[in-house]
Length: 450
Image 1 (spheres, rainbow, N blue to C red):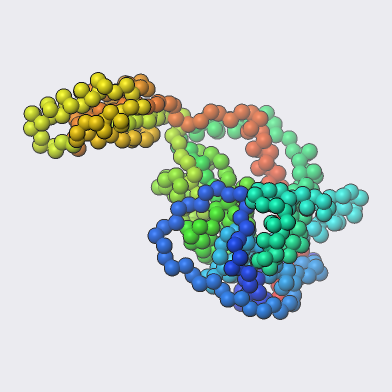
Image 2: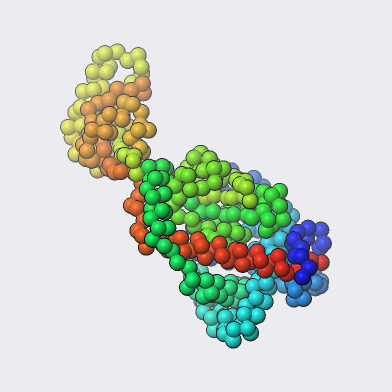
């Protein structure tokens, strides 16, 4: 076999790219999605690429199986429709590269599946009935009838056959991998216990609920290409492209099928570069492009919580402003006012309403925080008070305060069950097997790009 050629450098070859963009004015179809991160102050969006005519030729050959420029243009349109990203002069190369890589991988998968069907005399490839059921589910997730879903694709110049072939390859390949290797995988009790010990050791560390997009540098043609692609995807998500849809179409991580959802991860479980970025982020933020050894991550921080060893408290306060150099008489008068208010308040439920009736007093919700992170003047009260109790007036440089403890809990989360750990390890090992299988298929294949 001739060694496989990397699928790179395609933008310079033309391949009738603009034809894939002819229908971008139609509203994009978006799968069920997590909320997109808030957009920054608007900069002028790049102007969409103009549409041109289609001239069909050969884009690539995979073991004598032709991928035409029509196939490539159709897949690019599907990527645009399902990712929510508007095509521009800046990102068109990324659409083309991702579309061609996906088509090459699917051709290799289908060739292997057909060979296995012939050798083993079994049915592996999904039939039309299964594909129609998948499309019906997609339409249901978008809250539209199947006919309307298909019509919306066609309005964007996407033949339903393009979507069916993508689904056929994905569904059949997953079935083959699970069927061939799933029954052979055994997650031992020692593996589960070792994972439980690792989780227990990291339980006191901060934990992050994240979604991820991972661009594999080897897959896309190098680290520089991965960084450029990640930067372009971030810009599009900041302008409203949904993270979940982008992850499904562009991420090389095993979490892509779940829209990039990686769940809760603890400090120490991630690459140091990713962890360093997360420590500087707040829930709801989208990261910059994070370069690691073999690619580039984009992280969306959905939530963050303290480790199990921390105490977390939810507080409200009522306060009177007082300068640092306030006289003893001013402090005494403010203390009397807050003490009188404290006697009327029953807890967090009525603190703000009662405070609103007292001239000069401002009340508000301080939210949830680890007790150790509170200002020293507040920390002692938070440690000693129970939920529903109020502090005595507390003097700070800003004024005089009374605190109400709304809730108090230990940080972190409940430990994962043995069954949950076993299921996670099973999925990780199966995903690793699938990646190795694809690597071997690419290595032994003859892949030519035109």
